[in-house]
Length: 270
Image (cartoon, rainbow, N blue to C red; front, side):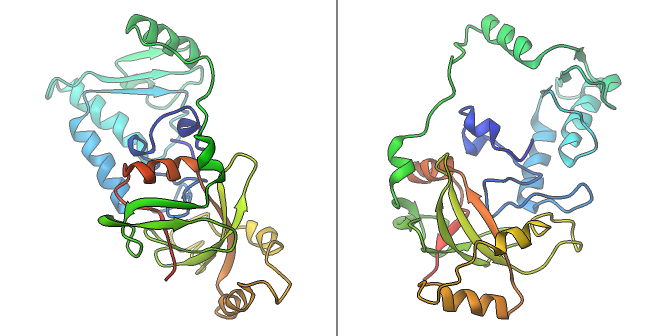
């Protein structure tokens, strides 16, 4: 799975996607280097799939050595040994991969063409256009969500997630658990842009979230002391915390309103 949110933009629900290598649109799930450490909860989810999946379909991936490839090898091994009715792996794409010999079926073809034929066979309608977010999602700044405002976990009492410019946010999971930031605004696609302040972890466990972008992101810090977050920002910098811009994909907001998520990636600071 790539980091670029293409699956969500194509309409795949966030709850069905295991972005085990990180995401550009989830502040609680920073991208991970090839030699880095992935999130424990996402690893457990992957292991569950390894044990339960009958068939794995690989679309366009180079299978160049990432953690998620264990899904291909595990199910292929089960199929070879005829365990639990496993069917193995189907790999689709023009580029050869190191796991081609393990696959039950190898198709050197366009993923678009293959999946179009599969959908036709299964009588599944293929949309002619990309799905669009609810217009209200792109303009609303206060979202009523069925989650605890402190932990981000499901709660009957619910809370309000405030994403208006300047609103303070706190990350609820992963390596950046507890790190705080504030809302910068929306980008042209409607994603919420945030400035977070992180402890330096790059080089310790391979997280790429703190890289050369730090210098560029620091240019977006306010220089006017009248800014309501100015004093707080100076305090974060004095603690040697590094600023970094992260995005919260608009699909997180829609999923949060429906209560589809196990946990919100961010909550408002008290």
